[in-house]
Length: 134
Image (cartoon, rainbow, N blue to C red; front, side):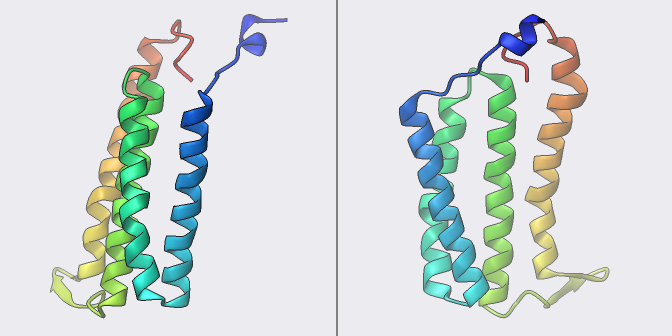
C-alpha cells in the first residue's frame, strides 16, 4: 500500500463546525434568492461572507486550503452581487460593449479562477512532496 492511501487530512472539530454552519447560511442565502425573499438573501450575505473569510484566515498556513477557501470567498461575493442585481432590478442594465450590470460578477469569478489556476498550475507542481498539497 502506498503512503498516499494511508494519509489523512484532519480538520479540527471547531473548524468543521464552522464550515457546516457556513453551508447552512449559504443555503439560506440561495433559498432567499430562489424564492425572491430579498430580506433573507441579503441578510444571509453577511454571515456567509464573514464565515468564509474566517475559514480562509484559519487555513492561511496551508496553501491548498487557503487557495480553495479564497476562491470560495470570491465566488460567494460574485454570487451575492449577482443576487442583489436581480433583487434590485438592475441586472439587465447595460454598461456597454454588450455587457449588463450582472456581468460585473465575472470579476470576482475570474479572480477565483486565477487563484485556483495559480495553485494547480504553479504551486502544486512545485510542491508535490508536501503532504499538505492536495
